[in-house]
Image (cartoon, rainbow, N blue to C red; front, side):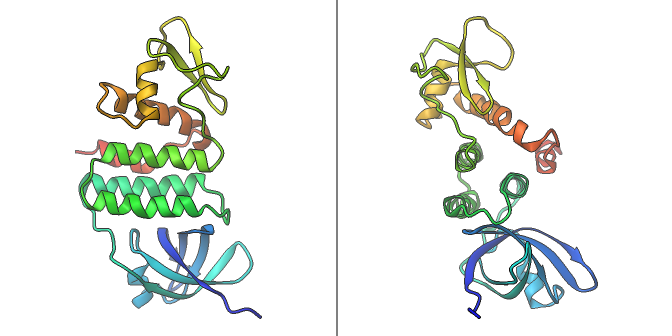
Length: 227
């Protein structure tokens, strides 16, 4: 029998399980894995917290695995305030959207890089929009920002609305929730100096994510609203 190979991982969420164990959702290059961590009140339990880069050995072939070995590697991303809430938001997005045991190594790498950028104090909104966009694209829910659903190039003075899972549709009458062509062109280039582009990107990502979240609100979003 092959020996289980350790792999890089981050804890997305952990909760008590039975007497002294924890049920932990991990993000790994092989996807989101759920595993039982025995003796969670000991040394291992201190590592089983978000934003700590880990090396974890998973045992078992079923959907619910067991943690065989877990060690900290590298430096944990230390965050406070809105940066911390942003990290929790990323974790909740991954738990809600990422299918179990569906490998997405690029998502893992981007997540790790985003945590370090948040910890370094870089502006939050561009980091969050980039992560949301890449996650949607990796899961097959992405759409073009440089052209509409008919294949026509986005026009600077045009008006567009999002048809989820299809793309951007050109419209001719102003209505709630639409996007200006100049905003979409800025998003495509990640040019956040264009007035309104970052706010429009936030609206666009919320619309794109909403259908895949099934109407259930994200708990972590409420943290930003608390004084």
